[in-house]
Amino acid sequence: MNEERRYLVPQRLDDPPKFLWWDFDVALVFMGTLVFGLTVGYILSFMLLGAVLASMYQKTKVGQHRAFGMHLMYWYLPVTFGFKRTPPSCIREFIG
Image 1 (tube, helix red, strand yellow):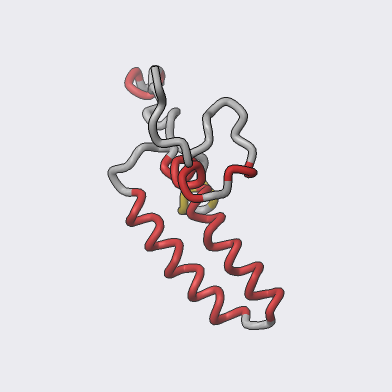
Image 2 (cartoon, one colour):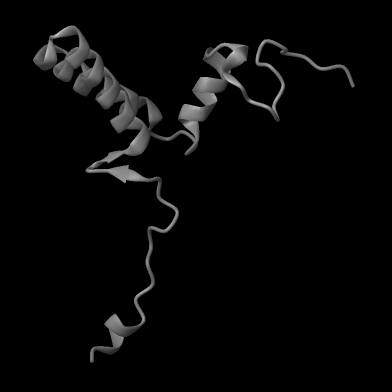
């Protein structure tokens, strides 16, 4: 048995989950527009739109924190979304 292959340590344990070749959150952007296109009846055009939006989101994510999508949801979704441990994003300054 090859000694180098015997003690191979995985290098990608902390990578985000993948769906095919995309990160999972990028795939959700694509799948969301695809499902909307199926609902409306314009499958091909919304599939192309989803691919463009997913690639734009992926380019925006480069060099950012791994939880970049969660940060966007915290700042731009309504307060009723349901984060329980964090204060509402509309409170910008705290006293104390």
